[in-house]
Amino acid sequence: MTQSESTAQLLGQITWSADGLVPAIVQDALSKEVLMLAYMNKESLQKSLESGQTWFWSRSRNELWNKGATSGHTQQIVSLHYDCDGDTLLVKVRQNGPACHTGAYSCFYREAEVNGQAATGPSQQAHEDRFGPLSR
Amino acid sequence: MTQSESTAQLLGQITWSADGLVPAIVQDALSKEVLMLAYMNKESLQKSLESGQTWFWSRSRNELWNKGATSGHTQQIVSLHYDCDGDTLLVKVRQNGPACHTGAYSCFYREAEVNGQAATGPSQQAHEDRFGPLSR
Image (cartoon, each protein chain N blue to C red):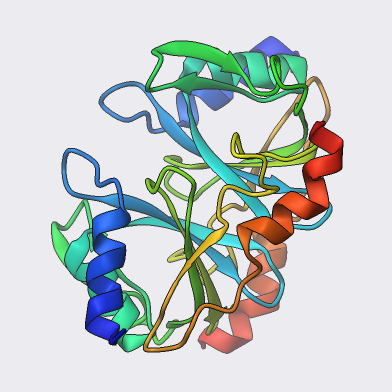
């Protein structure tokens, strides 16, 4: 099966939302930390599969978005999975620099209290200290 | 700050979708594998924070859903993070048995070809073999 055939097959197996999108979880293939969640439409999924880099659909700017094209913080795709009901993607990547536009390694740097337990996760500052030098 | 105060604060920091939901990525706190993605509304997030177990909003059944209440495959919440723009949750859990309703450990057992590379991930059968005994 050629790449375009397997891409066409995959596109048909995805359950697209009413606005033609599917959420894509991006995970660091090395550390296994979850980095971000963004949305793909058919065109951005196709570009991701063909280029091996992440392309998303920006819901705020209404445009295709090649992650890291401006910042240099690109994501090289290691694998792409889809879930049991085909309505979510899991993209494992080699992340260059921080994934978050704030400069944090992961977008998930804020922790909520669960059942009265205080937050214990690393602070945003810790993430910035770790990756700050890469983004300067 | 009491649990109810911190819960109220968190609920106010989440960017809810037009239908009052937020996607929640569920990750195994031990293996760091991403297990599933489901949706929470305010009530299910509140129940999750208070009980320490995952509660979701089922978009297909239009009802609150305590994950594992029927199957026994519950999820004990270890931590709950939210992302930079407050529109996605990351819930790290201790997963009891398989997370997927198919019996697979993770819902993401199907792999797509990227840039002509054949799928290399473990098959669904491998996941079932690993966790099957737990669910019998």
